[in-house]
Length: 156
Image 1 (cartoon, rainbow, N blue to C red):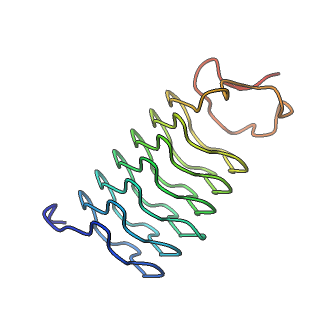
Image 2: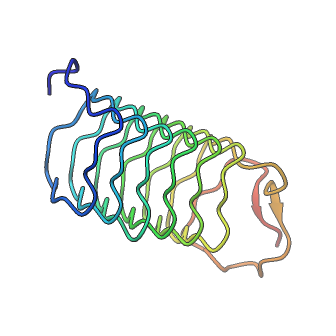
């Protein structure tokens, strides 16, 4: 995609953007409520403060190096999404499905993960929200397939 295309503040709610090449796009403050972005290429895209809530579908989307700072991803479906080196600081991921997602070196500082499904996710080297370093409220084995950053994860 031509990175000069500006979708800043775009009204794209409910749109089918599956398999779209949106790499490098500026989608700051865009409304993507319930949009279908399955398999979309959003590498290096700016989605800061974007609304991707309401079960927006991002299954298998490539969000490598994407800026999702303060994005609203409540109840978003991010199954098997590629989020390596993504900036998710301050993002709201409550109720999001991140099963099988790759979050290697992702920045999740200040993110809301309440009720998020991280089964089988890869969080190696990720910066986690404060207070999540040791998850003693969850029984050991809750997410046996999840790869946690060193020193983090459920207490055994």
